[in-house]
Amino acid sequence: MQWTTGNLFLVATGVHLDATSVGAVRAAQNMMGVTHIMFQGIENILPSRSSRIFLDGGISGLSTFLRRLSWTVGVMTALIAGVFAVTPDFWFRLFFGDQYIPYSYVIRWIGVIYVLRALCLPFGFGLRTLENTQPIFIANVVSTLFTLLSVYPLMRLFDLRGTLMGMLVIQVIVLSVLWFAYKKTEMNA
Image (tube, rainbow, N blue to C red; front, side, top):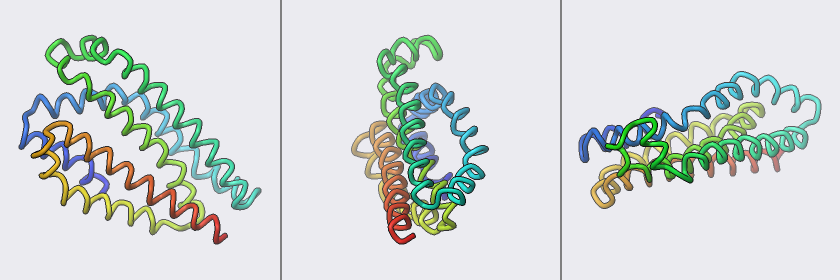
């Protein structure tokens, strides 16, 4: 389901618009790909560290840790996105050539999407640590349903910006579900 949500918008973009539009989104994602190093590092370290912090400090210790992690990961991702967002034409020209300059606005959208994605990580780990994974599944189901219901209307009405809107809303859905579920679990613990 996770694959479907983000990638269905890209597949539909290729069908409804053109390969260049898909290429622009993928180019922006590649530019933000440097964040994947950080995300993968977190994926490798955080599960065991979260468990250890929860065992030592309980739910309050875990929540404090996850808040700090959210700020750190969010700010670092925002800084990387900000570097590209300030002068997107320069970066698109440097990495992909002049033909993508008209699509340089895409990096700003992708940057925001990546910041939201980064903020999802700590709450997902917190829920896993507390052995409450149902909200992760629910977030995927809701975002998949949103994708299936909105992909065509968004693209029909807004073209490439519709793709970006859809990808952004998916991250807002996932972040909202995970955040509310973590807060509810935190209050009940």
